[in-house]
Image (cartoon, rainbow, N blue to C red):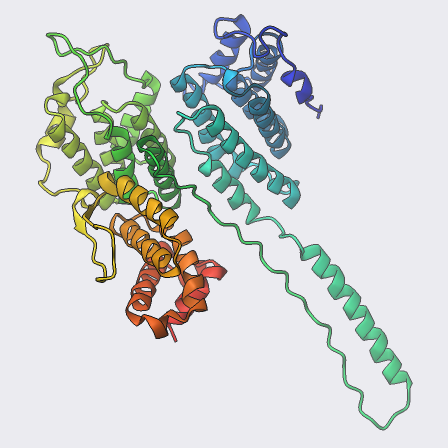
Length: 517
């Protein structure tokens, strides 16, 4: 296999414009896209990855530093070189962000994020199918590091982006679970040496006459400690846009863990529709200037999957499509059908309730059409919505917080809509109140607030902080009511996040051991 020299691909196009110009009308760019469009073709066409590699290379070396070309080129390298190509592509991606930052093409957010989301979807699908026998633990760890770098640099370069790389990290982590863990070879070597030493000692004892019975020296078996990987979700509720990004990340995490998690579908729809407060402009025929960002091939696939057997991966793709097409109500009907096909009734009902709430708050939206006359809601969707129940979505129902009389902040009512403001207020309190008890009370409030809206993963960092204080000051002796509140929240968090105790990370095991004493 030939070695890819990414330095050539990273060389500036020219001194005046290092990132070059938009290359989407160049012949090599069109040829590259022509091959990629064969994915999902109704005619069963096969992608010519050699052509993708050749034309993608020409784009990057002669015309433009383009994220689409980088993503397509990396996918071609994966096809040719497996994990080696994957690592090379990640390195190219990371270094391109470092060198060219926000000057990378495409400049339009939808086109840029669309290319990266396609790339992430491809990695989710193809990585588990690669031969991991030649993959070392060090190389896999290097890939994880590069993914983290790409995630951070991408968000820094394009702060308005909604792209999350969690799914790629999870795919690599799943592969690492099948690899021999670090320390196993060293352990085997140590054990072998100890066995040899034990054999020599035994021979010496047998060769020396003695009335004392020799004791057999048993080799000491050293068990390698498993390397545990943890999911780290950065949370930021400092502004409405930051809150939306955080909620989307949480929804992605929940969907990856459980495709039937109803709260994930509520979070996605809330973050998609929360900024839509009026109807789009339309003419006398109810036609809007909005284009439906769904190809005919995609639409055919979604309808086919909704009628028959549904693939969870298709559900994930449709969810991403719906975040880019907030007015495509028929898509939510298709999602409902897909979830029902997989017997995820709670999640399906969540989709229906959230969609019903949206058209209730935006009266008349279901009667509008896209620029190509495709209705926002087709006949089947209108019938589906007409049969809706009057149940208020659980995640949006006002839920009062119950605290002890020691609280100093006004609690109000916590919903997904008010969570960002509430968390921001408490964060300001944490910065202002440096007392140990004040910090503990405010962190306990955050844990309760996240519980009330079902965002259990966000409770973990605050439980960790409080637990240290709990142990240091012997909280049970001083304020048993607060200690009991914490213990109950901890137990609920663990049991709901981890169906089996075996799945609970080791550092959290101590939390449950307290409750089981």
